[in-house]
Amino acid sequence: MSAPQVILLLGIGYIIFTIDKKQENFPVPVILLLMGMGLSFVPYFTTIQVSETIIYDVFLPGLLFTSAYAFSPAALRKHAWLIGVLSTAGLVITALLLGGLIYWIGGAYLSMTWIGALLAASILTPTDPVSVVSILKQSSGNADVADVVDGESMINDGTSVVLFGVLSGMYLNGQDFEIWSFLGEFLYVSIGGTALGLIIGWLCSRAVHITHHTQYQVMLSIITAYGTFHLAEFLGFSGVLATVTAGIMLSWEFDHLNREDHYREALAGFWEVVEPSLLSLVFLLIGIEATQYLSSVSWLLAILIFIGSVIVRFVVVAGTMQAFSGFRRLLNWKHSALISWAGIRGTMSVFLLLSLHVEAGGSGNQLLSISFAVVILSLIFQSLGIYPLMKKLVT
Image (cartoon, rainbow, N blue to C red):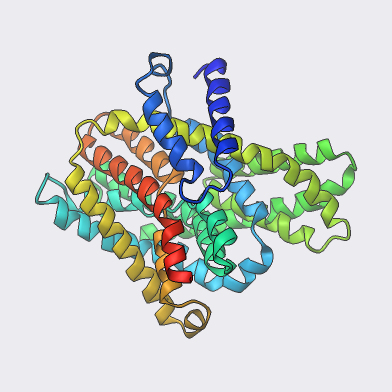
């Protein structure tokens, strides 16, 4: 991808963000996605190659850090148990149920193994709320739902990467599933990433006192976001969880500093510009990349899996809330429906798909095409449906 192409894509993103001010009925990511799919037919953009490395190493750390840093520590304390359950055990249960559904439905259309179905489910479980959170906060008058959706999406990305890594190894190498091996790897990657993020986030909150120049403070936050991610990956930990934890820790520490507003103003001024820039590029690139996978897809199967994924997520979310009395007092079935519908597939799912494409070396094209189609359906219909659904349930 050349520099002129990047500038042109940023220009398109700027125009769309500027025009779509409310982002209610037509959230920006949907417009960017559809615009990207249209650009894939323009010869100038056909040379763009979107790799899993670009998404994982360039886009994800910045987007994750921005979300984590902006996430309210008070909201995290309030919803810690619900967010923790949904993003760990809830995600694994969702993957198992959705995998069984994909295996049952897919058997009528194409040859799909049980492991292949579980792998597809692991790709489709991480959520990416993007503009959905802002819509929920601006229009519902109840921040609880938005906070749960936002917090869950930050943490379940890390869980999904571990789950995908284990299942992709089984799928490609014919390995047998070993529960203790999986749990050991999961705990090592998760706990290691979380601990590293806590340490670096705390160090950054102290190091920011060294200088009073805002440009250097912003520079330190960039080092924290990307340095934490890549250091964790180098050590074999979850870079996703490390970056998210560092951002949350930094935000929490700033809440306890006398000059907290000064630091927040400096960092927010920078990252509030970076976030829409990264979003513009990533969703335009997803649209450009997705087109090649959709030419021979079975849309009926994709639609059935998409509907099934929404139902499975609702069952898991509602079941989790019913299992704990504290959750029942906090949120009702209408909120469960909103949380379920707001669980949109996006950036992380695309990264996992591209990773599978590289690892599979050309095999598993049916699995890739179906999964890409479900991601596109989720981005379009769930993004467009969240505002009217919210108005229907909340008012």
